[in-house]
Length: 221
Picture 1 (cartoon, one colour):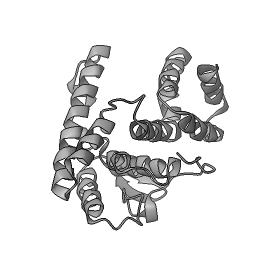
Picture 2: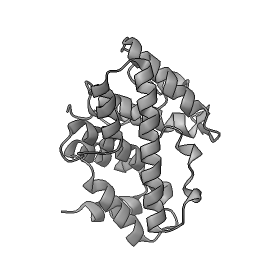
Picture 3: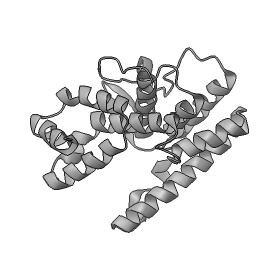
Picture 4: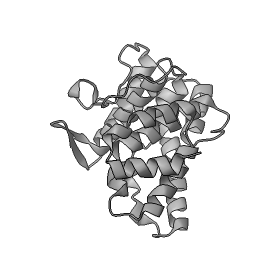
């Protein structure tokens, strides 16, 4: 992987809500995949406004994960790039509240959502014309299979985690006990590669000082 450049806010490309963070890619299969997943994410009924641009939660999420994949590795392989397009496709149709509010319920929700998302991705990628090897690898990357041994799965996980630090960590930590926040940060950190750690550390200046201290405590050693 290439080193991540100096961090700056990752905004929606061109302010149009596109999830395409690779505009130089003229592969018709890629263009078809972008259009298909963009349509899925645009159907999300949850609006989101960022920097005056109205989009949806899903479009915003996938635009920013895709942008982080590119920033972390400017020549990332297709399974990581496609996985970023599809990571949470139509998750809004399977809300967390449909499952018990218990740790076991959370695990069931995550497992069900992941399998559903991978199958939706498989359908769209096959329709776009990608071969079976790329489709299967993309689904495996989305499901975090062989995370410790597949650089593309690790890259996508880094992008997802860094986006969480940038966009959600502060709101997640608000109102939660410090011990709970420490646990989440530690678990997130453990899933990331050194490149992901470097990118996340570069974002700490955007966080409140008490939260930065928690991050430092959770990641020490």
